[in-house]
Amino acid sequence: MIADTLPNISTDYRKGLPDDSRFVYMWDPRVVDGIDKKSFPKFSNYDHRSLVLAQEGDLVYLGAKGDNLNRAKDFVKDYLNPLGFGPDPEDIYSLGENLNSPVTDLWLGDESKRKELGKHIYERVGHDGILSPYFYNSDFRRFAEDTRINYIGPDNESVIEVVSDKDRFVKFVSEEVGIDVGPYEILTSDFETNLRRIFKSGNMGDALYGRGAKGATGMGHYPINGKNIIEMAQQMQADLDTTKRVLIQPDYGKHRSPSVIYRVNGGVHQLSPLSSQILDSDRSHIGNLNPGMKLADNLESVIEEKSKRIFEAARNMGFKGEGGLDWMIPEEYGELPAEINARPTGNTAPAFVHNRFSSNCSVYGSSFNVISPSIRTFDQVRVALDRLLISDKGATSGIMPIQTGDLHSRGKMVVVALGESAEESLRIARNGADRLGDNNVKQYLMEESIN
Image (cartoon, rainbow, N blue to C red; front, side):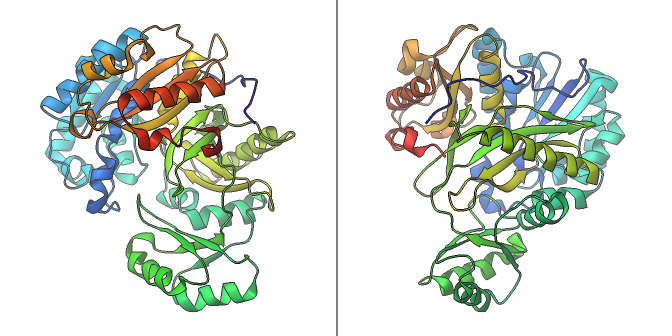
């Protein structure tokens, strides 16, 4: 069942920040040493999602350069700006390097480059600037301090680990916040022996699910049954240099998985309504429905109250910044907090777009990744979507592309489908996927794929 009323959530992504704030976006996920270089293609052009969040006066630094950078500027100038989104195209810059190693090495590790970049930023935004990196880490905190702009993130990296590491988060919520997280164990070695012990105890049922504490994209997810213990144990051991530890929980199967975005900066500010995740058959994230599926009784308010408690506890521990909190709602256990992604998430930009369009009327938005087998330019997108393409600030239905960084090379985009009801939003999403030629994602844009 889908919600029939929209919550009253601020449409301003800058909630909890000074009115004159000017963001400096550096969202390329390749900024962190811990990301395996093999995963780099999966992160390609993720930073382009910041373009729809940025506004006039903000600075956006992309990993793109040359023709890719010019295409990003054209997308902003010709499409986002007329809809009231995006920065001045002249304020979109390239980091100017081949990102085969982290930006922290290329820019922040080189003193001359760091000073050059810092001088350029400060000349443009002064003390009103707020650095918005994709990940919070000490390199960016020091860079913001040297540049004399603001950094709204944790001062201590150990705080980030407590919030972001999946096992430490579950332990923190259970022991420090006092919210039930369901049964779990944390494994660091002897995986086969420990998995057999857990199965034998029966405390977590006949199927388990393991998640690496620091699992990167495409790594650190282990569905475990009685027949694949050896295989999964070997994979856990092979991944251990990256994942560090493995959180073992029951495999809850198909379940609701709402998510909510907060910012912590003195106060604790909810930036989005509860959304529902759209997943494929492998439980991989395809997109989100904003707002999400209607939950039973008063469960939405319960989850929002518990979410605020979790972020308040994180604030009291020293956390600052934004993050998306994912929940699980398996029937046999009730609502269980799953993890915080202490960074901009896949739903940050879509939720903001939805909130902006729904500020004056009831609009639902389903966001999804689409890959076209033949479309490679935005002019081709315009032709394919035709009247379905949103071209008016007051639109209540249609398709709005919000990230086109991979369009030229792979035909990949992130789009938001707006509708006056959730059913209409999903119908328009399916229609859009069909017109763009992605029949694979089309099959998952159904109510039964919403979690």
